[in-house]
Amino acid sequence: MLDRFVMGEVERLSPEAPVPVLRVVSEERRLGGAANVIHNIRSLGGRVTAAGIIGKDEAGKRIVEVLRRVGASTAGVFTDPKFQTIQKSRIIASPHHQQIVRLDRESREPVQAATLKRLRQFILERAERCDGVVISDYGKGAVHHELLAALAASLGAGKILCVVDPKKENFGHYRLPTLITPNKSEAADAAGIEIRDDKTLRAAGAKLLRQWRAQGVLITRGAEGMSLFRPRRAPKHFPTAPREVFEVTGAGDTVVAVCALVLACGGDFENAATVANVAAGFVGDEIGTVAVPFKKLKAKIEELSS
Ligand SMILES: Nc1ncnc2c1ncn2[C@@H]1O[C@H](COP(=O)(O)OP(=O)(O)OP(=O)(O)O)[C@@H](O)[C@H]1O
Ligand SMILES: [Mg+2]
Image (cartoon, rainbow, N blue to C red; front, top):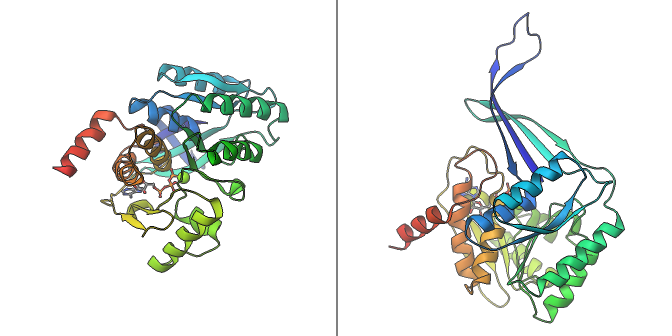
């Protein structure tokens, strides 16, 4: 996914300009969605191979170019000529960084079966040689139930580590992930439990552990931090210092990236949640999807643990 941010100042309505005018001040293009997860992993020093689907278009070329520039392998990025690369353009007005409108460009057609099959084969084969797999599911079709079923077979055999950022489209298909990171509304939706207090949060966490047969469920709760659920253990809450944020696009991408890195490095679930919480706290500092630099994260963790 490619994210575009157009920032500008709104001019007052006048008889000469009967429609609102935004005078563009700056414009940026960044990696979005799963590509932002990859960017986050690279930014923290991880080695990563991208796997996904793009269209035969400018935006697709651009994604591959930027992924390579940040040091990711693009060996698993497949081009489907019938697919339109997903692009989201956000029009933002200063001085309050208010998002006025978002323009989405994406295919309405489902991804071709042959492309899905190539992607699936690539991921399954490559997974065995990697320290872990991250499934950044944006519900756009690349993460397909057959891929999840095939991955579950490897996960059941304890062969790979897999961290999943889930989306509604596949709530019924995730099986045996090492860790899965729904936000609060996704957790409520998937569990069929309205989360209003500690009791309902615990009920949802416990239900999702069973439903997805996960080793860990990490429910992200925006400014309230996150809560970790593990089978036969008391839930653990990780509060965060709530911030006034411009916009938190991509906080969930940072969470899944950091959790995967920490677990792949041999850290435990608590380590993963602690570090992810700190890293995701930085995301709202800037407009748009951003990758957290390693030095900044390290300095903050040292400060918090001294
Ligand atoms: N206002 C905030 N202040 C501090 N930390 C925040 C804030 N919002 C989000 N975070 C951090 O980011 C994490 C993920 O945020 P959230 O639960 O909103 O995920 P999300 O809805 O998946 O985000 P997105 O889909 O926009 O990437 C939180 O668990 C927390 O660590
Ligand atoms: Mg999310």
